[in-house]
Structures are given as structure tokens and as C-alpha cells.
Length: 162
Image 1 (spheres, rainbow, N blue to C red):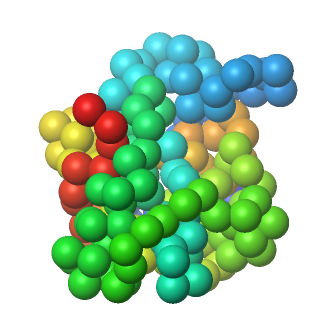
Image 2 (tube, rainbow, N blue to C red):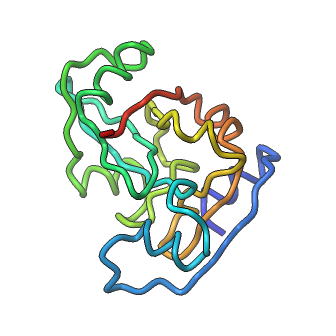
């Protein structure tokens, strides 16, 4: 069990666990998950941790085949009164691991050591369920996006490049 699965159980979420054998040479962990699980990439979401210009960390959850738009992420954080910032950038990997308790490539939005302000790309609302990391490479949790947002106290916003 991982902290992500423990939290899903504790909260009584409608989730399913999916495991696959991770290939350490895979170019993209998220696209690998979509391929090995046989689901569309728009349904598999990656968890990225960003650092703001005020020094705070925040989480962006977006489809694995999309790119995070830093300006849109900063705007979403400020607009939803999550954090006041003008710019974001990818957080330092060591800082990510310390803050979340997960290794890169296996960072789950669920069960992080320190809960960070979170924005989920609005495209998740078009899906019945989404897949997010279960806390290690080769482990995904499938759950309804509304349950993910409620559990994380997250907001939906368009945060990807078009």
C-alpha cells in the first residue's frame, strides 16, 4: 500500500487500482501508463509540482499528453485565491520529493506528506474517471475527477497549452 491508496480507502473514494510493469527506459511515464493500461492519454493525468515566485509549492494535474502552461497555472492559483503569485516554474526535484514523500515519476496527488494547493486541468471534467499516479511507478488509481478535486480541495482550470 502507498499513502495514496491509504487515503483513497480512508475517504471511501470510488477508486480502482491498476498495476503494470514499468519500463525504466520509457520516455514518458504517463504515456507509458496510458499505453500499458489501454486507455486514452486524455484520461491519464500527470502530477507536476511547481514553485511560485513567492517560494510556495503547488500541484498541477494535467493530461499526460499535454504541456503545462506556466502563465495559466500562475493565473489559476491567483484567480482561485489559492496562492498569490505572478510566475511559476518547475520545482526542484529534491524539494518535490521532500514535500510530497514520493519519487519523481511516481508522485501522486493523493497522500502527499504536505498537502499543497492544487489545480486540476479543466479537461478532467470531461471524463467519467481519470487515472493518476498511485504513488509509485507502475501503479495508477482510477477515480472520478470530482472526487479527486474534493479530496484535494482542488480547483479546475485550463492550465495546458492549447
